[in-house]
Structure formats: structure tokens, C-alpha cells
Image (tube, rainbow, N blue to C red; front, top):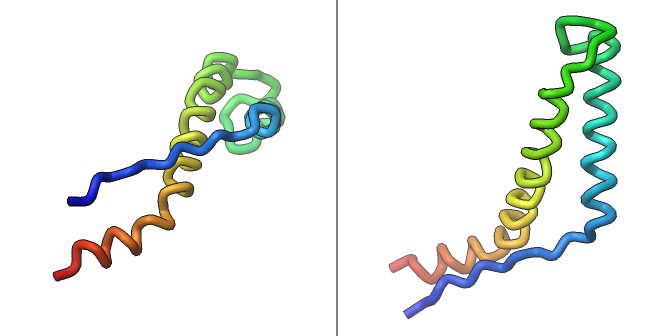
Length: 81
């Protein structure tokens, strides 16, 4: 019997914060310039805060997926009959 083992990555917190800061700063500049957003010269703080909360979760889930992707071929070969 095979027991599923999920590997959880331990990302470097400083790199994690830098990535989130760069993304939020880029979105703020694009929003203020009116590129890809409706009202130029305005910042939607609620949008930026919500992205600031969702982005770290999404990045971590993608890193968990990337860490465990190498196990997929093994899983397929073990379940082939």
C-alpha cells in the first residue's frame, strides 16, 4: 500500500517579501498611470490590499505544486496495471 507523501517547501521569507513588494509596486504604478485600469491618477487601495493578501497564498500553493510535480510520473507508473 502506498501512502501519499506531500513535500512542503520552505521558501526564503526575504525573497517572498521582495516578490510581493515588486508585484504590488508594479500594480500600483500601472493603476496610477491608468494602464490596464479605468481611472488614471487614482489608487484603489482595497484592490492592492486584497492582492497583497491573496498573492502570498497563491505563490505558496504554486511552490507546493512545483515541489511535488516530480512525483507525478512515479504516481502514474505505480498505478498502471
